[in-house]
Length: 319
Ligand code: LMR
Image (cartoon, rainbow, N blue to C red; front, side, top):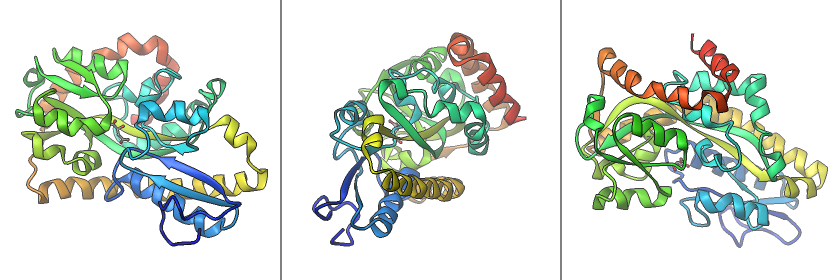
């Protein structure tokens, strides 16, 4: 790097392996934004002359649908889509979309460190994509243009979803409908009433300002938003082995560091929503149980594909 700018596309020196890292979120108060920036900062400082990472946040390069195809074409080298975005490549990550599967991010972390969790990183190798590290975000919350206290409140509403059959089934179980849509389009769709509501983690509700165009956000903690840092198998295989190892070591250290403090980032974003005037609806245990009862039956539809062993392993961690 000739300059200190992290995402300056003109900042890489001749001879450096240029790594375009494309993602869809903001960088401020956001687990993925912060982790991607730190990864770039460390590679650019410690691998000067060898490798240079350019981060493109906020869908400035690709949305998540286009990202994986672009990666296979060699147009972009790295990204960190949410686990819900891999459904056309592999079904194994459906476990993360099943509502109320993990009680918190610590349980997700433990599952990912298990043999089953680690194996999932290589589930798309055949398709040319290698999973490198999981990055956490947080638990998902639910919002709409009207207060959501009981599951019946969601009936008849249309929710924006990530492209996941599990999440679509989850909303259908509430008597609601679901519309898959790119992340960058959600604010406009909520504002104009194309959809009535959405689900996401606090950092995205804050970063995209969804709270501005929703009546309030209900703290359901009903699901998980987590990421997989990916690269193409071809690109990784083509790297000088020493360069690849150093990059993967930095990525591993950054992942451990940022995953370790992710709950703080999550809670900061929650507080920032309140500070900006957004409303948060808290549920008591009985109210939350009604959402569990309404959503959890979708597990049955997906148990075979996800694997009962995986479900049992995830549940054992919750205990
Ligand atoms: C979404 O599409 O809602 C999220 O996956 C965006 C993200 O990357 O956090």
